[in-house]
Length: 315
Length: 292
Image (cartoon, rainbow over all chains, first blue to last red; front, side, top):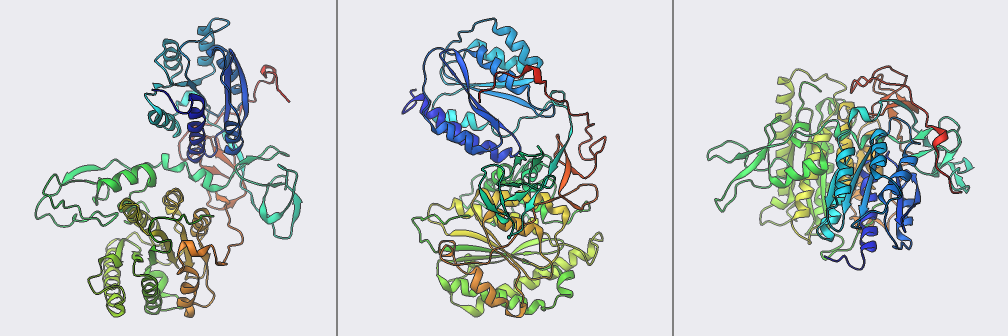
């Protein structure tokens, strides 16, 4: 069950894949990294909105030593998460390989504190199931899973990338002021506020409030503090608001008109072997699809081609 | 942005899915008649098939009330790709049938407002992406897919979410979306699509020379594109439009629950119904020691 070349290397690699996937699914979220070593927890990177700084830290040399302390980690994380605005959902994900925790005080108190600050804690274990992790996850509403091998670990980790259903009481709904910057003019030369390098206006974006040059989006303007995003960042999450209805399974009946080819990819739905001719059908537009298109539509595309190809009365 | 990766197959074999706008409201008032436009496109399709006998072209028509597959070069009979007349004939006939069917559906469906009606591009893009996924599944030896959109009618704002979903899915599968605008106005959706997926966006000035534009810019496969200087769009407008008035804004308020955009402060979100409270500032006395 040993992870090759070493557990640390495997965890770092999977964490890098997770961070890329996480920012792909949640472009407006922030991630920070914390390590536990010799019983003390250290902050590896600041909580930020750009994947590059997190991945650079993971690529660096990470060493393991000493005991691990869940309580110290929770205290540190709690301190950092208390700084974020009230509309944000707070979450911690532990990648835990130890079989115990050496704490300076009563960990149950810390768990109560996390519960009060509405921090959702989840744990992915690499060794065996530990009671205290299970208790922590149950109390705070997170999920506890234990990996069986390397590919299972990656699968469990990537399951944490799509956002979980949000509990309404955990974060207040707020109207957040955001800016949608445009690219600057070609002939405008200015110094960008993030790297302090000279850049032409066309290579960066201009903050609509303070007119300063920023290099990439999404970011927070360093001068006036306005959150700057572009509309695709918000649009990436709209598919959660308008999900595709699950398709019904149907069997092919002889003499049935139409429905012989998958509407999406035009593949024939009639199995020449005469075996089970099951395929799927959208309950709203009644078009037939093959299983592969069904998986693609629900996991990646988030649009039903049949419903989009019809002009319904709501358009 | 997207670089072609070398494969076991041949680097320059491509699958082109052409999405043709057949909106009758637009073509009725267009400078170029639809029949001429169609002949430009079909000659372009033939030239693609002549470039390599492994090239694969699919045409999807985007109408006002429906979308459908019109032509698939993989279904051509044993005559081979070089039988020009047969390809043209088959495609024109199917296109005519589709347009008649679409017109019948539009007439029976009384909710379409004429003039500003948009084609169902979201449906056509979704069909194109499903077909491309089928090609990906057919094994490691497959052509490199790309999508070419020929659009003339204006964007339909009700299709925004569906079009953005298709764009992100195309970006993940590394399928570039090229656009050639055959109308008078630019399309913000397709500009964003081409920018995000790494495709080419072009609005030709002389529509009577459409075939030449298509053959010069859009005929090359993805691997050879790295050696060409293709038209670059100067500035894609990524500003959002507010949900209340649909006007473009550069600073607005975003609901933290459903991410809808408003231009003014509201007490309640009109999309998800959440009531807004004031933002609570973080407690500055509880900061842990900051390392410089």
